[in-house]
Length: 276
Image (cartoon, rainbow, N blue to C red; front, side, top):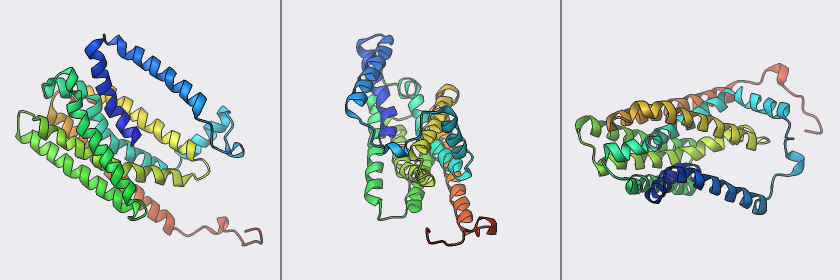
């Protein structure tokens, strides 16, 4: 939830800073905020992982672990599915200045009009996901999340294809629904990734975050400038991300079922022993 909410809150804070300071004030704020986080982590966030289970801060060892994780086809499918799914929302986050100021004709102090419903959708989805944990199969919950995202995408594309002038209400509500769907899907994908590596959960989590942040950088630097000239282009781009995420998710499900159905090769079969 925090990973999804933070990028949505950031432009609101940036808009408030621009209201009383020059754009350089944003970088001063980031420097002070980072320093504050460093102090808080050092003073009040002790390492909880048992010492005997920690990986040494040794580049070849870390590189070997990350290489093993990246070589896993199911990890790649799950990580890319989550990245593409979140990319539908991050495209709007990266394009917020153009979407809010140029397309919706709002001002710098009105970024919250766009981001408040988006954050609300993320929080609502996270709440539903938490309540559904243990009561519903993860695969089913993820499918529901993708369905919500698909419905929101169809609404988004259809509305902007038929209506020339974007509306604050009908152009923003689809992004809130997209955020809700993402919040339903993302925990399932993350837990599936962590379960692949029960003894290297931190490494798997950091690699997932690396893949996602690398994609976000590409979206912000390449895709957003290309599509942020109109609401329809943004809607189409978000739809492509949602569809790609769903296809990768379904591929990962099929891949996992095939792997579970495959018999263990005789060369890998182990004879039972007293120790086992």
